[in-house]
Amino acid sequence: MTISLKIIGIVLLISGLVLAFKPTIISKTPLPNNSYQIIEMRVVWGFPIGVGMLFIFHNQWGDLKLTLCALLIFLTLGIIFARLLGMVLDGFLKNNCFG
Image 1: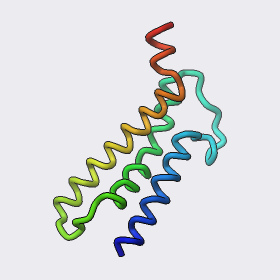
Image 2: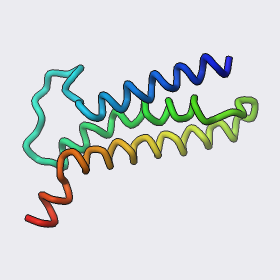
Image 3: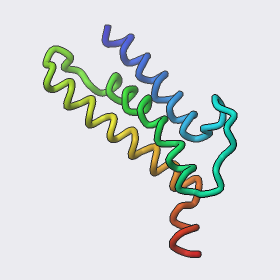
């Protein structure tokens, strides 16, 4: 079971990264002009990144409290990673700090 969870986790992690990198693959909505809104479009794909990391790195599935804490931690990490990816790709710091 752990091997199948790790395989599912790898698939979720890779698909979340691809969709966070290019969020218009699935939806054909045009990208907004504001870089902040583009970054927020990428944040949605942080959830599969976080769940993928949970399936890959979490080993103690029997303890419910520990699993829920790990779920919250990995979801937060996935959202942060997707947001940082958006900042790097969309130039949030360049557009707002350096003119």
